Image (tube, rainbow, N blue to C red; front, side, top):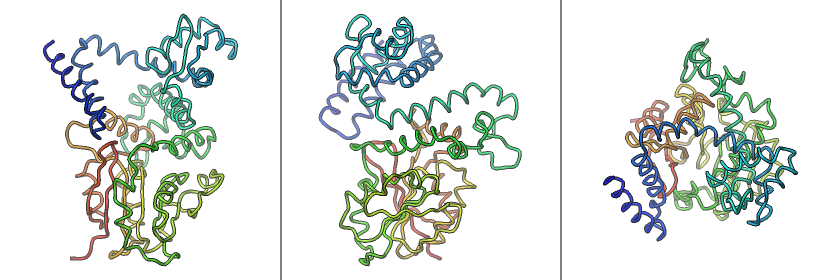
Length: 396
């Protein structure tokens, strides 16, 4: 009990620091709360919590599918009854109550009275298109894989990267495609969910890559010719990173080019002003030579080292060793005390893409193997991702 009291005192200090706006305090506060829970729980309480946690996801998925949270949020904090939710969806009122007990217990909405519910900030966030996309993306794909995991382990066996002939991924064993990218080509709903999710992952108040890495200063030496290419976002999806960069740095000269596969680019209703779209497969030669910067955000963690070498080699071929920079926006894991979210992301990369999150030593070895030199790893006070600044290594 003394250890619990000690942690409570530390939490009080962290909470005050968080309220004062200290950048790292919020993450440390959450970590402290998690540590407190683990210290206070008995072994049976910890194991029971882990055994039952999937039930929370099931209840959330039901609410998302039936638009219950949208209905509750539309009342802006005023009560919505289980009977109203039942009438709107045709589901039994008792069933609604049973699911809503879980949702209120985990904080996704408030219990305002007997069988009456109101929205809170988490309700409002959960109904954003990006949040809905994330829910469907993770639940629909990951729970299906969980259901096939034992069969997979006892059948084909676990293959971490499945780079070799005959090796089967859990994703393929479950969904029929080796990785998520094959599924997205065939499943329009999941593709839309994925794009919505990726578009919203960088929240407005989260550190932006072009602030973590001082782009405005670093790009001060960019060619003044407006026809010159300033920035190439390789595999940039809907283009949200380039759009935010250009909106915050309108005076930096040069073209901004978004590269991705045709399937992704066709889904963009209107290309943001100042951004050019270019169809490109990053396993093929890079058509833009000598840009000021090439940018890879959350790309290489989708691929094994063997495949990442192929992707990076194409960028290196196009870089001007005296002018070009490669920026990799991704996780850089510590060797010790990796956070739960970082560890979960690493496992998610294995499940979805046969990829991996890398430590600094891992990144260094991978980049050196293709002739790249790390100049600096830029990290934010908040958030988990870093920006790795690289240049083409000059011959010695």
